[in-house]
Image (cartoon, rainbow, N blue to C red; front, side, top):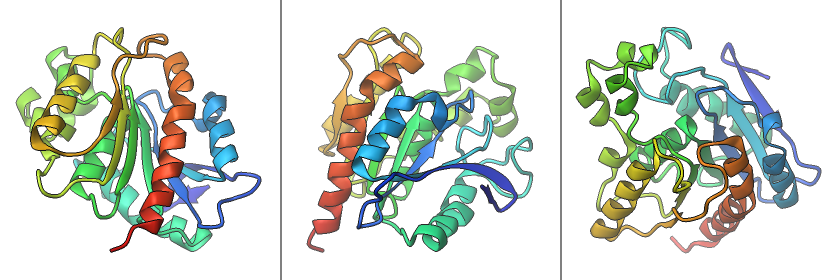
Amino acid sequence: VEVAGHACQVFEPARPSEHGYTVLYLHCNRGAKLAAYPAFTREFDRHGLRVIQPMTGQSWWTDRPWEEFDPSITAEAYVRGPVLEYVAERWGARPPRIALLGVSMGGQGALRLAYKYPQQFPVVAAISPAIDFQKRIEEGVDPGLDAMYRDAEDARQDSATLHIHPLNWPRHQYFCCDPADVRWHDSADRLRMKLWSLGVPFDCDLETEAGGHSFEYAEHMAPRVIDFLAERLERERLRVV
């Protein structure tokens, strides 16, 4: 479908949840479509979860302009604006019945969005999140990040870990990373330690090995990750305010 001039992938389960539960899926920097992850769509279907996947290229889901996506709206603003409006109009789904899910680039984007706007996104899961994305600037392998940030330190200051507020955080968060993922596992472990030291509740798996930073690992983790999202969306619905 097209949303505000940009393509989005949409998944409709055979029997959608009666409560309108929806997943906002943020893709990796390869722009992999949902069809690349059959284990994901099987789990979405099993739980009756509708899914929308905005396609924003190598935007890193930041609130910095990325010309190749759109010169007038950032990826973050696009997700929080036109995409949420589309989901509300098409499916009648509104926060907090919308969960964030992302892989790699999308995983860090999902966490960052949830840390910045925890009341809007109280349920979030990330697979192989590329949290310390400033590494790609240091290595000189990402011209997009070079265009969005002055230097690696500027990017680090905008990383997911630095957006955690000790008194205002998503009530339900899960992240996982394969120990063989040599690029991103350390930053996921640092996130774990920071959350633990702040007393922020979270669930994580940094021990399971299933292929390193790969589609195989993402598919292996799909059942437990999507189980988490479905269960926590239900818990959030039943929460007494």
